[in-house]
Amino acid sequence: MEYTPETLYRAYRSMKLIREFEERIRAEYQQGKLPGFIHVYRGQEAIAVGVCMHLSDEDYIASTHRGHGHCIAKGCDIEDMLLELACKQDGICKGKGGSMHIADMKKGMLGANAIVGGGPPIAAGAALTAKTLRNGKVSVAFIGDGASDQGTVAESLNLATVLQLPMIFLYENNHYAEFTKSPKPDGRIAARAGAYGMPAVTIDGSDFFTVYETLAEAVERGRTGGGPTAVEAIATRYYGHFEGDPQQYRDAAEIAAARANADPIEKFLQDHRCKDLDPAQIAAIDAEIQSILDAAVERALAADDPTPDQLYADVYLSYRGETA
Ligand SMILES: Cc1ncc(C[n+]2csc(CCOP(=O)(O)OP(=O)(O)O)c2C)c(N)n1
Ligand SMILES: [Mg+2]
Image (tube, rainbow, N blue to C red):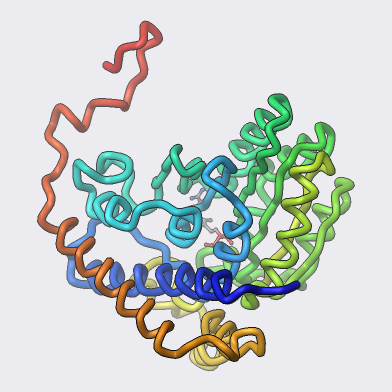
């Protein structure tokens, strides 16, 4: 596949924005400035970006509890996300969701989800809409290796095959579910999805180019009536399950090896396809990202909390068309 410089800079910017966004929120969280729980995506950036670069705002994704990367790659606004993480009234979900419940319908981002395995049925529903309306849209469910065993995923695989939905099951196999290491060999998750009767592959999720090329085919299949695809992307969870997790269940050598060998951004920059990228342009992108984050953090921390009235708005739906 040929890559224009624009595509390469775009991929770099998106991966780096995810990385720096999360490093900044970790720092703010450690100082007690952000409430709730955060689950960091570091190490998996090439997956969100390699997938979402094939999608427009009209396509759908359903995310997980580890969703910042998916949101950013799908184009959610950084300031609105930071306001949401700080639970402020102008947040992307008006401050009621926080890190684990970011949704942005304008961007086809159907929601991060604290329910493990909650995303695939939602993505399948969106895919059914696309198929019914014949509008050529596709729907991607991001699914952890832990989530892959949920019944909701099995039902979604079944429905997607039976109805030949324009859907992609994007498994991110980082070998951990919370504090438990997966005993399964790589490839088992794709094999199970394949048994439902859809094309299913296992790929290196730390390599942007592999993800991008695999998804080019899967998205095209979905858009042209070829039905669902499953992709098991092998990845590394760089940090703990949640920010602050001391990781006593993971030995130091394993953590060090993961951090040394599996950085998708380093891998990208060292790839021969990036050899002509201009270091000055890369530095300019890095500087632009820092200024976006500086402004977003400053605004988020100074912004207003929701008022008591706002907290109850949009929570209950009245079928007479009013909110309670
Ligand atoms: C239905 C449900 N069961 C259990 C949990 C608790 N829980 C939160 S994250 C998690 C592990 C998920 O692992 P995986 O799907 O591999 O995603 P990762 O954290 O590795 O990104 C569990 C069990 C939950 N949130 N929802
Ligand atoms: Mg996992």
